[in-house]
Length: 297
Image (cartoon, rainbow, N blue to C red):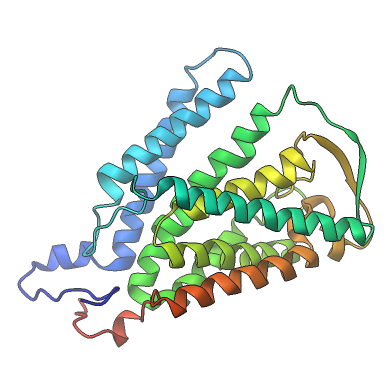
């Protein structure tokens, strides 16, 4: 059976077919995800060790609960259950993602420096790096990729195919950053296009969440913890103290370099390459109405 095909089963009860309809399954998965996240916040309130241990503990609780919830409930939902956080391939895929994310954002910062919009103003401190590492890189990468690629992309793709899933998940990802500090319509558009293609493309290519998680975490870590650039508008301390100046289209303004034309061009090109590679390797899923064996409600 080709990837993306749904095995017809005319004998299934109507309720089961409704629950297994991709958009319904996606809504159930989102509800389970939100319940796990809420439980993590409640449990985290009882942890009072002192900083930075509190931040690390809160992130660990959230990741453990989300991972357990995914393994126990979300991965098995729908007509095509699959585990995209499997242990096999974890380290290679995570490593590839980390390398890609660090390289791409280092290139963005390098070009910004050459154009005179990124300036190093001093050295940062190595004493308070654990909190931004956990709060702005590791936890957001895991939680957001699980939601936007592991749930939203997965079930929209099952219904509308890879192109539909790529467009919709990217748009939602960009909208999800619209309320961030310093966000503008352009910064959200940039995030939707550059990050949507990058993260969606690596997910399509590997059919695993580990490479998108690694890329996302390294992207945030490199810009915030290493170069001292705001992460999606959020200020963070890094190894370097820096300042952004010049036209907002080049600097990204208060939102940071993610919202710049520089990142948009470089990372969209890289994301397009990942998507093209996924298509060449036969990872493209057709819309449900174009697949043989698909049965509507």
